[in-house]
Length: 359
Image (cartoon, rainbow, N blue to C red; front, side, top):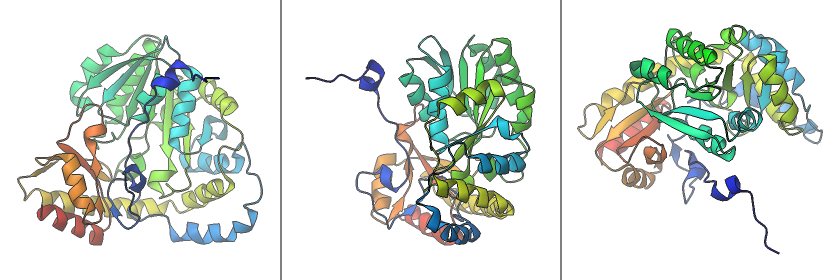
């Protein structure tokens, strides 16, 4: 007997990502600059709280994440019924595509960007068009003209890997144009809470645009990457179907508890953003002294760097010094002349700068 997976599964190629386990020979001792998580990690208060919850790990979690959604409603200012919770933001991307897209759905994705939009849309056999730009704000009208009818747009804001933040006024032009063409707009705001001194989120506009869906992640902003927790915000036409199709008990008890505890420490984000601004300037100013590297302007907790050294070679050299960076050649729209560096603490950033100076 020969078993044949369906056509999308046969041609499926998983996306490449950063992190210690994104390399061939994972080394737990490396300093990881390839993952864009909170440089301060998880708040100590969350860790203390989780230790007190360990006796409850034998219980099934709430399949609807009701308490967490109540807390997220308080945190975001939207209603509980407008929130869906996922086992990381990526699960929500896949569920969104599975629920609302099909082989007849035209997709528009500005690149370079997070790879999972393309990968999940391909599993639905969608027709995907790409729009190459390093800064969508500079090509806004051309992009708006490309918006498909009865389709879907995926936009990461701020963008991963470029770090570019599109202003609210410009984003609303895109959403409004898409609405006129009956197209959905999927906005990934995974990194928006790590943008210092910013108020560019579009969450409050879900009541004005029924075609708008916003993705958020507690993984990045609150340093919870190891337990996987994300959420989506929209109107009932989008949220209700997503609640129905998600797998039972998709978010573990510990993840729900950790997320609820983390958002209680939301002033922690202010401290984090101050550190990001300071350390981002430290890295950029030091790399500017070298002719080998050019830092792109970034609004958030990572920096895209153009390098005269091939990215894969540079990654290998730094790994020997127990430093891991993101090779950006796997991003559609970029090549081996780009790397991405996550902002970390001063002690760690000094080690990175010295290692790069020595190459």
